[in-house]
Image 1 (tube, rainbow, N blue to C red):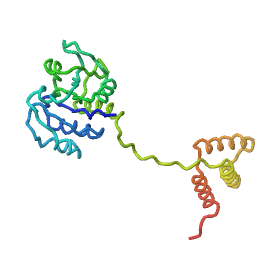
Image 2 (spheres, rainbow, N blue to C red; image 1 turned 45 degrees about the vertical axis):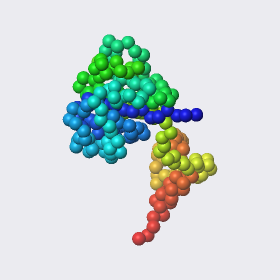
Image 3 (tube, helix red, strand yellow; image 1 turned 120 degrees about the vertical axis):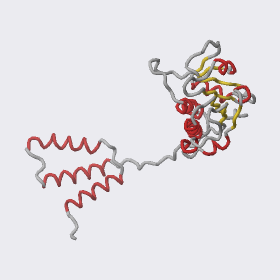
Image 4 (cartoon, helix red, strand yellow; image 1 turned 135 degrees about the horizontal axis):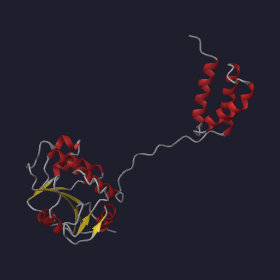
Length: 240
């Protein structure tokens, strides 16, 4: 079965090279490399983009510049516009999660539009899109910066992509109860010799508390052996 290509991220009239770099970094974190710029205010390439990209150089190197949104989206079958409101345009509205699912199923390819940092997409920009993407956000503080908006969309798309997960680390199996009991008995014996259990009538309660503390973490066999080695070192310190 054919897979839909990754979406193109289109920054419309971005203002700061630094923000372009941060958006590129957000893209590459989640496996996206198709960055398109529509009339960047300070031109392209921009010297401020590289440092902000923190190593996402491949995204910046492949970035393409267009004069209009129509040109930037011409090869894509489905265009999404990210905006906090419909701006008078009646179109379907999706959450980032819903849009990501559509992107993954759109064999003709998708593009996602992000507007300038200060004003967002204009009505004419949104008119090019077929669907609006709106992030559920605090109505009293709807302020997302450009990179934050990009990373939200890229993350949702990545959920269905075959990205590598951090390598799993096998945990040691839990210690058998007998080993744990032996460690606790060793500790209790040392504490009795040291006069820890006082007054005598509190000894059962203190021992229960100690056992509860030592059985909470779920010690592995290696941890039990290590702890018993520690206790043995206290009991019979090595001569220097």
